Image 1 (tube, helix red, strand yellow):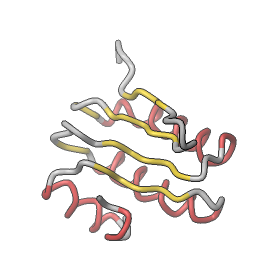
Image 2: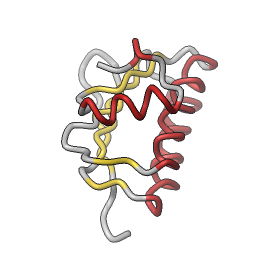
Image 3: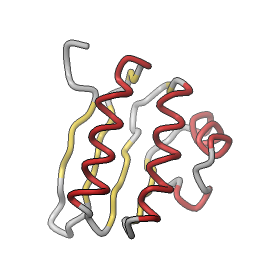
Length: 104
C-alpha cells in the first residue's frame, strides 16, 4: 500500500468522519481497523460517520470490519453511520450485519 486508504475529518459539531478511498482492498484492512478502533475506543466522538462516497466494492474482510465497527460503537456509546453507499454495497453491509438504520 503506497497511499492512505482513508482521510479523517472532524466537522465543528464533533462528529468524526472517515472518508474511504474508492478502492479498498484486503491489504488495506489493517489500516482501516486501526483507525476505527482508535476512533471508537480512544477518541470516542459522539458520532462516527464512515463515508463510502465513490467506493465501488469492498472485500469480505473490510465488510466485516465495518460491521464490527457498528457493534463496537454501540458498546462504547459512539453512534456509527455509513454514508453514501451504493445500493449494492448497502446490501452487502446489511448481509454482513450492519443494521439497516445505520446505512444512510
